Length: 102
Ligand code: FES
Image 1 (tube, helix red, strand yellow):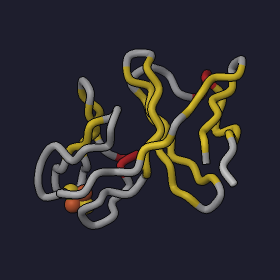
Image 2: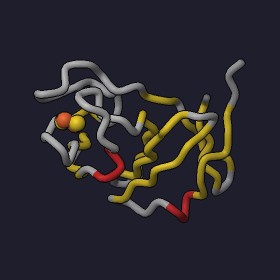
Image 3: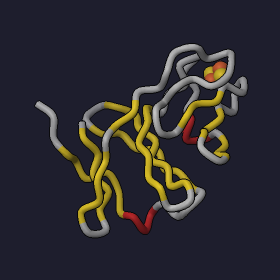
Image 4: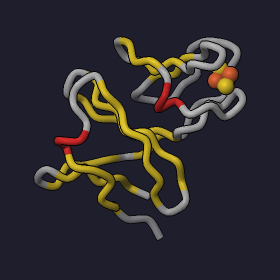
């Protein structure tokens, strides 16, 4: 059964930063890009690198291993060598808490 789970405090993820965490056995990266928050699977669909150690640019996150990039909003793979999208998660704010739908 799905439900929202507290993932982090808003203060922990400043704009331009991300945070890796594990919720219910799932590796997730929370991203604050220009004040917009995103939650994605923290495993590149190419060979599984942690995207939390990648690079943020305008609307995408780029894997540090081989350079695949993904749309922060949809998880769509934007460049090779990744072809499959990243799983994305709905999130919401509850006061200063970021909650992710798991
Ligand atoms: S593991 Fe991410 S591009 Fe290869």
